[in-house]
Image (cartoon, rainbow, N blue to C red; front, side, top):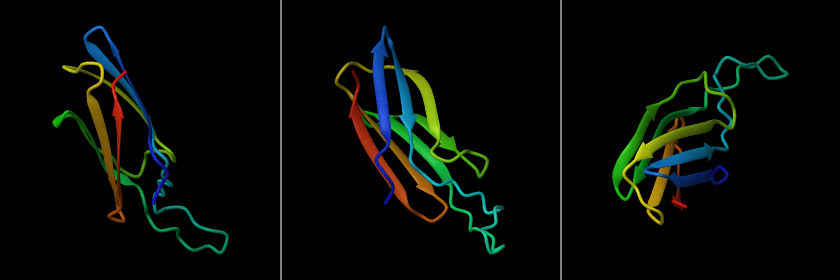
Length: 103
């Protein structure tokens, strides 16, 4: 399993600013190792975020996203202390979910 996501969610006025750092190899399937063998594709294909059960982000990703991706977005309709849950799923069928309280 991958490392936990580093999530920061801060309420400023009526908007929540979210910053996420995800630990993932994000292999495109086009790189070769030292022996000339193709390194199999292994990258995040879906990222979702929800606040108190309401979906606030739904993103489809591909192989062009860099290793250990950083994602930032903003949404309305939350309060301090509400829970923000972020989930990703990759090409290997692995997934990770992490949750943070909005500050």
